Amino acid sequence: SIHPNMSEAETAAPAAEAPAAQGLNGLDLIVDGWFHERGVLWPGQAMSLQVKEVLYHGRSDFQDVLVFSSTHHGTVLVLDGVVQVTTRDECAYQEMICHVPLYAHSNPKKVLVIGGGDGGVLREIAKHHSCVQEIVLCEIDADVIKVSKEYLPELSKVGFEDPRVVVHVMDGAAFMEEHQDEFDVIITDSSDPVGPASVLFETPFYSAMYKSLREGGIVCTQGECMWLHLDLIKPLVDSISTFYTSVGYAYTTVPTYPSGQIGFILATKGRGPCNKPARLPADDSEFEYYSPELHEASFVLPAFAKKAIFGSSSNK
Image (cartoon, rainbow, N blue to C red; front, side):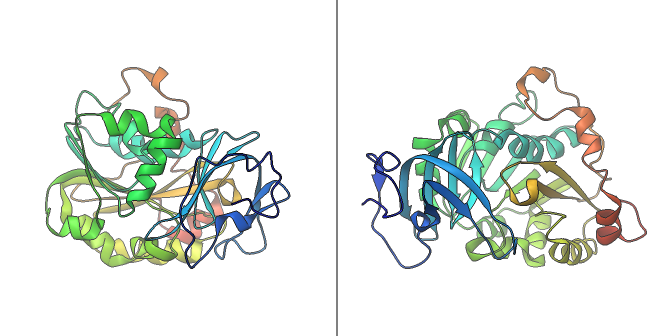
């Protein structure tokens, strides 16, 4: 069906259309050829991208799923009205959420990914050929995997075809309950803390990750935006600092994320902080964004954020 606010050129032959269901309709966010992202977690501001063609729109069992090609940002994946990926700037997020914890670990052999159904995190982990032996992905929404394989091959092809990868379509917390003391690194690539992802920003989920880590392990999670969400970040950091050995906060710049910035919470079990690489890349030509220098710099926070998250103590 053609949305009333979209021109014929912008809606020409969508590749797929799933039946409509109750809840947010991503097509309603496209007005006069522009997609507008508005959210309760970033009040008073919006992000707009010019739409070239809608490639897919449907509703999974969990959320509204929209994929469109944009005029200047490549292919865009939107879940419940929020931009998750654009192929123009996704490297800044995927590389940092993966390589900061992986290079901080001297020998990560087994890695768990919670979320990450677009395959971008898998693609980056797969670059660690010398040490990583097994990569497990737990994604609760099978439609995200299916849509990404079809419309985002730049992210999905390498990871999902890697023989080290095992995919489970299930709740990550339930999986970890059955796999204790098993993983060297756990990466949680989640959407914002609304809807199905809200539990991923709560202390019990971090406790489940802690139990699933091996001694000396590292957790790295999507940590929201220091310009918008200090009221979410600080209580979580305070809470998990009572049982993780160290808790730090790093960040990266992603132009199409709210305020152009997103952070990562890095927590460890029986080892020190993650702010210095324990290994160096054999071939840095594989990276568009990450570098050992940027690894260390990402933990250096603006004064207001450091004070708000850690008080008078340092970013551990």
